[in-house]
Amino acid sequence: MRWLIVSGVIAFALVGAADAQEAKTVQCQKNADVRTVTVASTPAGCHVLYAKGKAPGRELWHYKAHPEKCESAAQEFVAKLQGMGLTCGAPS
Image (tube, rainbow, N blue to C red; front, side, top):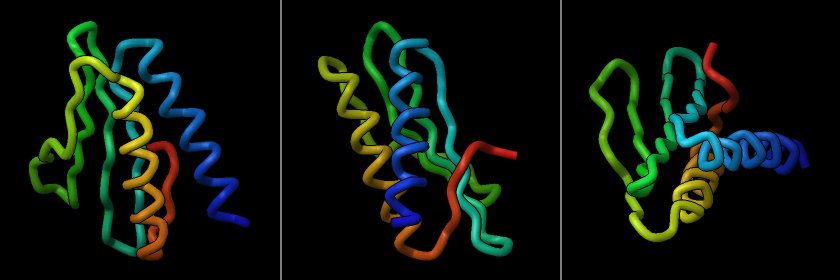
């Protein structure tokens, strides 16, 4: 139940990113392990970026014609991180 509430909050936050055409970031953490998932939307499409710790981020997905797919892909990936025991929310 808890993960469902957290996922709903994250989903609501990520959906707003496409409308604003700017980056929206979710940070997941377990002890010193910090991971960042960012959805960046532009008029030309969207990208889902992932960074682990201080390492440079990498692109997981990009869509030109269907920006809503970035939000759903990011939500699924954040849920996977939560399943690994990380706690996710807005960056601190």
